[in-house]
Figure 1: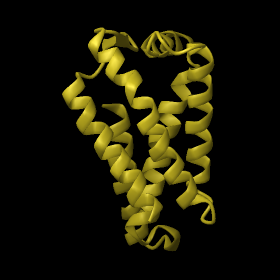
Figure 2 (figure 1 turned 90 degrees about the horizontal axis):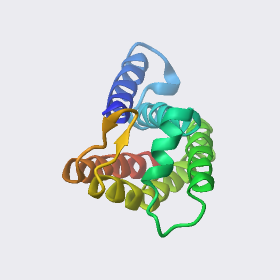
Figure 3 (figure 1 turned 60 degrees about the vertical axis):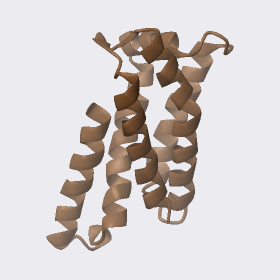
Figure 4 (figure 1 turned 120 degrees about the vertical axis):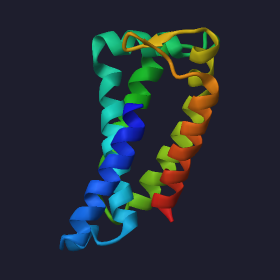
Length: 146
């Protein structure tokens, strides 16, 4: 639920700053990009926190090679995408890349839900709820890209 809170709260706070006179945030799209960036900094950083990292490695479907490398790679891509969202010339590309990354990572969420794994000491989000969240996150990234 933390990624959803980061996305929504970050976007709303940034949009309010835009309404208060911060010109760079005086539209929904830049505020949404900021909310997405906050979400991806949050999710990307935990790829490198040892206890969370172990859980994320366990989430990788068993048929995929080098789950440790995949977790590192996705964490780096999430953090790089978050930075890219703040660079106007590359923000649409970063948002598109993050949407594609979320599509690519979804099988790990499905696998984790089906196997009843935990993440950060709590059960992973149930599959139906996770699917809805994933659709919301991808839609937000697409909206930030166009």
